[in-house]
Length: 183
Image 1: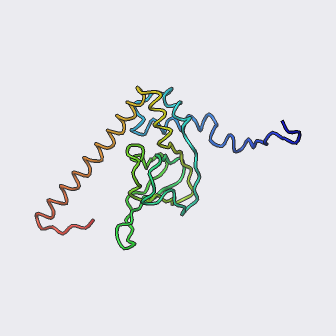
Image 2: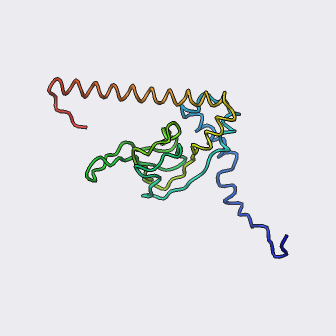
């Protein structure tokens, strides 16, 4: 070992920023409120917390851009996030405004496809992120827990498909009856 080597100094503020017992309990409650993870027990959820990466974004900062590779699911711990899609000729459509406790980007955990929309911090944000490779490894190590997680994904996808179908039928019936429809 080199004589000039010094142990790195630790800043307890940063080490404990997301590690207080209150923060972990709150994070655990937040995770269990997401339909993907609802089937897990508290111990399973505690294991998932070890996969979480914490990110901070300032107001106006892009979390990801439309067309980026889908790498993970985001849980809003603090702040607000807007989901936008560039639809044509620079026209932007706001798809959702999300806040504390909401989650987004979950389809990336299923298919790993490109992001269909951009996510932008509307205010300063603290986000918890689970990246696809980490979750894939967790599912491989714990297949029974993985089945519960995949069942949670199935429920979200089914609910969204039902909603899209209802909206489609509504638009189609209005068009059929000659009612002018604006998106």
